[in-house]
Length: 186
Image 1: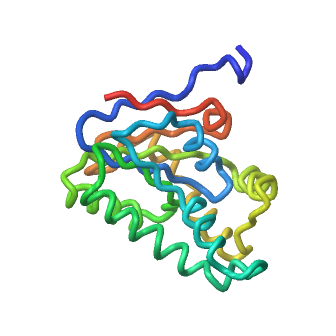
Image 2: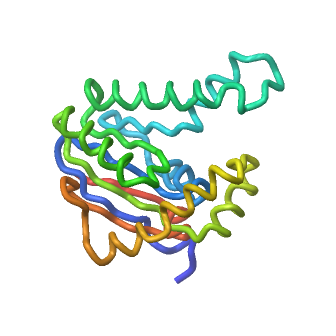
């Protein structure tokens, strides 16, 4: 079976849900999210979209480090708003390489009366870096090294232990799965 003919990743998300798509920067999270067919009952929040909207408001050539903080803040505010008041399914893109970040998102889902589902896009650090270079946006060296160190065994733990406490499901996919796409069913 070729990559083009391989079926998309399927995820069952009944009722009010929050789906966290997490993994190293450059692992393929945005690629995976870009494959989701639009649905009126679903909102997809990708920080790349937040950045694109913000950059249109800034003077041409404004260096990203000057407004990175605003992208992160606006993306997280949009996430909180969507989880508390949004449609039935909220899909969020965040690296979430720390256990604490994933716990906070799970708590936010609970506050919004939503089941929490985790999709971890696994990539080795060198592959994630290649993905960053391919998209033309590279995370600073020290920041990426921190993500890589924290994310090192997340896929292994999810495979061996299953969903962490409070998560309805946890799924590990790799970069090739990201290219195949994601489909969600109620």
